Length: 222
Image 1 (cartoon, rainbow, N blue to C red):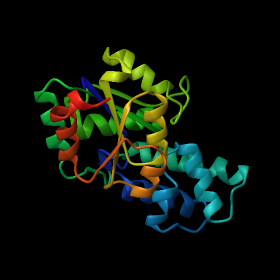
Image 2: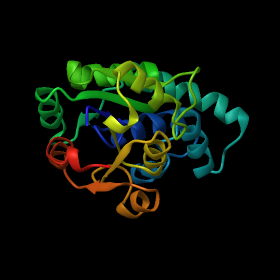
Image 3: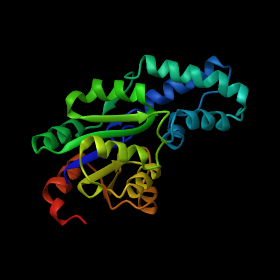
Image 4: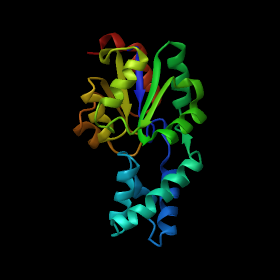
């Protein structure tokens, strides 16, 4: 494996508390009830627009008027302080350093808006992540493989030389659609069943396992 494409939320960074905070703040400012943090595990992963619609459905208020009010409150608030309550998962920085020492090219592909994605990745990981793409208007969101293909071009590698790592159904479908060896992680927002049912080639419980697979078992991967 010459490269790895990582999802961001729930894979590299624990952003659940941050997302829930700014989402609930936007709801409260709009006179709507807040949502328990754990419910956001199942609302995130498909981009900010779908997140806001999911929030509004959850509180029984999914109208265009409410969306027009809540979406900018959430997007602007989150983007202004995207690192609030956000941190790398234990073992991630060590994994990225290990991959860098072995000249494995690293990238991030997220459905989070590109501006916010770039801020978080740069602040938390710096040059440990070489390429980064959040959601952009010119590229369909995951699970469409278009973003993964764009990254592969930038990385200068073929799908057969790259692993995709994520924590949700969307990630597993993205990796498979792009023809990448796909790893599901258990420390993120979803469970083993979702990862297995959506085609994970392998499921790991700690970041160190990703390094072992890529560096020690890569000649055995299909």
